[in-house]
Amino acid sequence: MELVYLWVEKYKNIEKQGFNFSPRFECHYDEKTNELAIDEKEHIKDFFGKNINITAIVGENGSGQSTITEILGLFNFGGNVGGHSFLVFKHKDNFSFVRLHTKDNISFKVILDNKFSYDKKYAPRKIFCTYFANEINTFLNNPKLNSLNSYANFNAFNFSELPLMDNNKHDSIDKKLKNKIDLFNKRFLDILKYDNKIFYFINEKFVFDSYRYELHMYELGARLILSDNEKELFDEEPKGFTLFQSSDVNDTTSSKSYFYKYIILKRLLHNDNTIELDLKKIVDEIKNTFKKQDFSIEDYKNINIIIDKYFPKDYIFNDLYDYKNIEDILENYEYVGNEIWVEKQHHKIKNDFERENNLLKNLIRDYNRTNFFNDENSEYNYLSLSSGEREYLNLLTHYIYELKCVETRQNIFIFDEPDSALHPNWQKRLIKDFLHYANKFMLDKEIYLLMTSHSPFILSDLPKENVIFLEKDKDTGDCKNATKDVTLNPFGANIHTLLSHGFFMKDGLMGEFAKGKINAIKEFYEKVKKSENPKEDCLEKYAQNIENFKNIHSIIGEPFLKTIIGNYLDELHLIFSDDSTIIDKELQELEARQRYLKSLKK
Image (tube, rainbow, N blue to C red):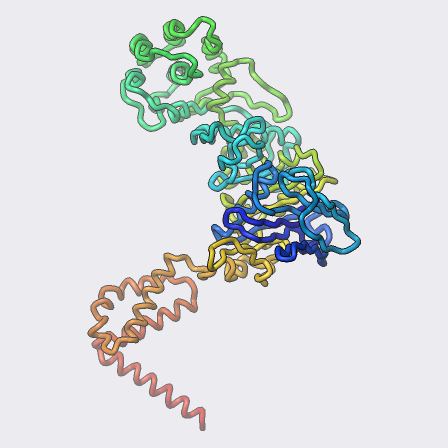
């Protein structure tokens, strides 16, 4: 099933606009005659691989890129686009049309070649797509989608079994971050079990044979807002995210002491909110023992006996904090500094492993960072990778996971600015790597990749027929499909050519800060040239700024521009100089030039 065309009657800043997604067909809907013309075009068959197509949507901010992906998402999730908006699909030699919430006969006349057929009624189904959104800008945070279907998201908040939001309240930042990490860990491990060398295609470092859990207990402090009662447990009020000074944890005994204390704090302050604790009474009873420097397992047991009095005997989490669970954890984990405890043993990727310790499961759920290792080279582990490398693996992990899960033949993957957090080196690889894994997993299934992007690196991998160019209407500011007006073919173009094209950089390639500095010299020069008495009108400003002008000129990188600005400064020097010898020298050079030109005439 191939996505061919979208017509939008009216949605947000898009009104009466059509968008062609297929390089094979050109569709045009004429609202006046109520006719949809579908023309076949010359195209390169299987350009990206068998049954694979890619379209990029580009344009300035606010031109409608994300709105198009939002509309497709609404078709997918069963939302309301409104008006006479519809989609066109093609399967084999037959076209079908999708308009939400109707199975009626299509409401327009279709004009196309006789070798094709089309359905007379709107297809009685939604489309099926996987949406990958970035954290900054995602329509999936739209309250209208509350209670609609779940979604896939490479960058956070993905729960396949839960609705998008709970009463339209967003998760706290730390919960979103934890959800993002947990989701990545599970999917990454699942993919590595399938093939631990699956990322070797990208970089030889990306081979992982084993993993271990790391308990980053400082996150407990990051999530706590201590009341006056709880602050009494500490000799000094904790600063920042650190509950205990790392410098105090200098041996095995002291690290165990602080681990015991962490577990007590977790029990007191992270209960499930079904029990109302009298924290003031508890703190008064335990604070002297809690403050001990040589806090032992016996102290832990005694404090737990006190805390037990404040919980019902049948409370389901009472057994969780049994001292035997803690001893088991400390037997298998070691302290490495910065309030982090790591597993002593690595677990093979291929082997299923899970401890029976319920407290450990609870800590892993809340404070775990899973690290993955290359057994042949100990320097290569996931957490030692650069942030850019981890971000790229994060994106590919969710993409590959969704490819593996696809069951239907129709698969539309929508990426909202997947390049936004990527280094240019990874942007250059993105299309190639997407296609590599699509060909690896999709086999006989059809896949369609649609992405919004601002990256010239991505566009240089796509023919013009696979790019939708958007701009803002000069009068209304609404979305305008400018694809037919753009003559640029981005495929194989170098980055400078793409960036210098007026569609991408209407005001040139120079940064606005540099442009302002250089324009200040140009504007002052023009003001001086227009003045009838520049020494009287402009000398003071010249004296104030000339050293700064010279400094700016000295660091200009573009040779031609540097020469022009240098000429401006030389002429300004002549105008404002009191040294007549400079002017005499300039006159002599002009006279010599005049004599030379006259000699050429002879």
